[in-house]
Picture (cartoon, rainbow, N blue to C red):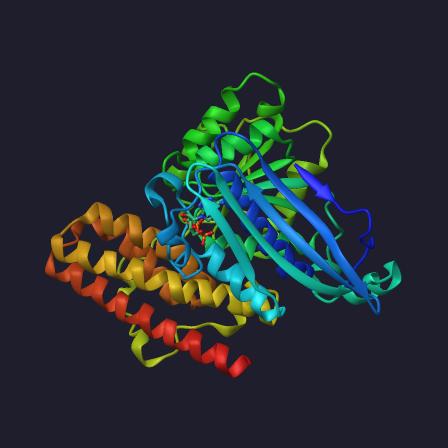
Length: 417
Ligand code: ADP
């Protein structure tokens, strides 16, 4: 449900990137935690003074609610009031939203009762603007200027918050409307209720993974479910993965982290056409393969920088806030993953090492040089040997390097301020 106050002006001046991130996150949560009833977003005017409008935004749901003793923690990074196994997510969304609102001089409020639902709200004071002003103020980055806008709506399915932030910001620059889902189950629910031109589908996710979700979508009744383009997002584009992607009914794949132009053209390629291409595997002009690099571990990265500032800049479009958000999510998310890898390596739990190194791989690659990306990729491949001395030595050295990378990212952020 959506309620919009007629008294509000059509255009106000504000930070649309941050604001849409906050709203997407609150709505995403409301939908995620509501099985029955409704989710309602309302935007109301609370008065005008000298052209400045006080705008009250409220997102209310009738979902499972949040226990009182958890309410004060949910805005802290990595805090989840419900089992993350079932709902997925990272526990970062609200922390980021709170920080973004803080930067805009506002605060977020929550009111919730288990079994009845939750209401999140915030107030912003924004000046009214004109169309001309809005048009002149928003053209700022090459990525939006150099590419013709794509007037489409896509569903982005990924359980990694860092990847979500990076992808959403690019898509926004190109005018693409994006809904986010954090696992296959959520993706299926969304795709059933809305119409998208394309789905960007991560493969490894909690509950329902990308392959199963795609198969399920393709098997649904309406022709729409067979036509909608599904592009896999994979951190390991090996021949095996590519085959499985096509077998599961997806049209194509993109290696993560993707090059912005590649993302753009892939989406355009599949959404441009009136009739969609068949689902038969086709030769792609951009065959991306992570090179086999067993043995490249010898490179001693401890003496050089692991951070590749240019690459990081490229993935974040050189926008300071996007850089900060991405880096903050990375810095918060990573220690937990490293802990799991460390413990699993000690226990010789290869499966767990593999799973978490895989998780690490795509977010690390947004920041680090190629050499280190390759090191992480090769450890993922060798993970079955976890517990053996030689393998564990490589794993611990990689953990040290990721910690070094985190330090470099923090320093970079400080210098960039
Ligand atoms: P994530 O959704 O990735 O876990 P968030 O920071 O967005 O992270 O949310 C933190 C936690 O707050 C969630 O895991 C959930 O337990 C709780 N939460 C947030 N929004 C809602 C909501 N609308 N209804 C119930 N619980 C919520």
